[in-house]
Image (tube, rainbow, N blue to C red; front, side, top):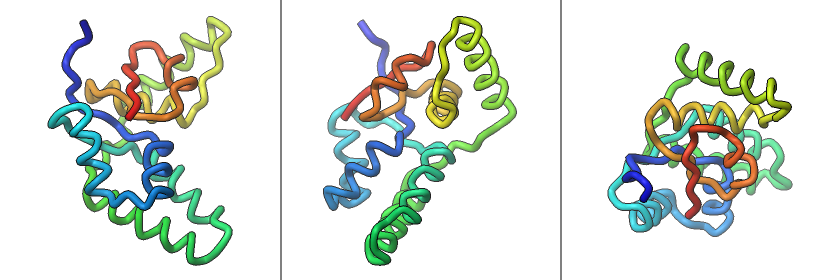
Length: 142
């Protein structure tokens, strides 16, 4: 039996899907809590960076502005877990151990995972393939 879920760090894939479906940010958080209970929902600065990247890849100025507004609402509602010295050590350790085994992990995903591991949280993602390769990380899907 898995232990109770304390919280989740959002991967950009979850936010991108919600924004594309025009799901308001409060409804996104409510749907997460409906699925997993009254848990904490947080962001990694790397998730925000990946989302901001999407603003500048938008095909139209209107799409870019819609994305910018969604991200702003998200960061106003969902707390951001900072990258800390502990994060750096954790990333270096996991990346080094896995590299020694011949496993290459996507660096952005590793940073997001480290934020979750530090908090004792899971990563909420649609990108199970990458995140499930990170040892010590609980991965969940909405």
